[in-house]
Image 1: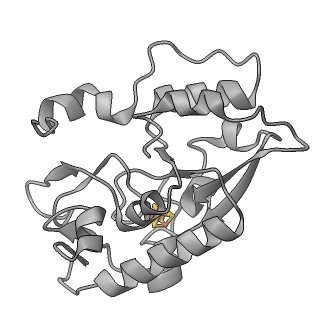
Image 2: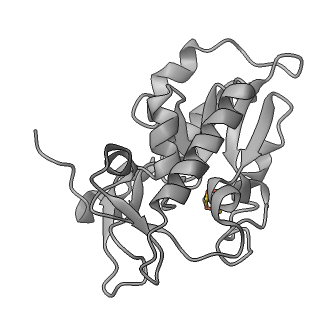
Length: 212
Ligand code: SF4
């Protein structure tokens, strides 16, 4: 389940406390891990800093690409579909040099699920646009292609997490993250104008939802 599509699910979870916090799997780069393809944190280390410091949230960081491919590494992107299509065998992951890294991406995804299940996380907060961690929008083919193309869809690790019933939200799902933080921090007032990534005007204009 993508939490941004079903944010009401958050209202059914027990109130978190410092003694009984919610447990969340988190993309390592969102916690400042230098696990990006170039050894940086993808500029993500402070993206959700205030929320990720709350005592009502226990974090389980992981990077599926670093786990399977090491850092630095080539830049994987998905060709022929999204992460669900990779799991179905109808799409592949390749780096910018054309090397097929599908097996490594699947191994990283499996390891991420194993970590998530061992820690009994309730949900995952993952970095969108990644061929592993993306959950709303990812590249359609190599991100270095000109013009760059995008697709609505999930990364390979996200696809596996969803298959195992672990809800996912991205760092760009601002409306749902606000609702989530209000549960974690009673008294926090979410921005009523915040939008989730799939409702961002650029996404709506450029990546129309499939009909039917
Ligand atoms: S695979 Fe996920 S955790 Fe690792 S750098 Fe990419 S977005 Fe961050």
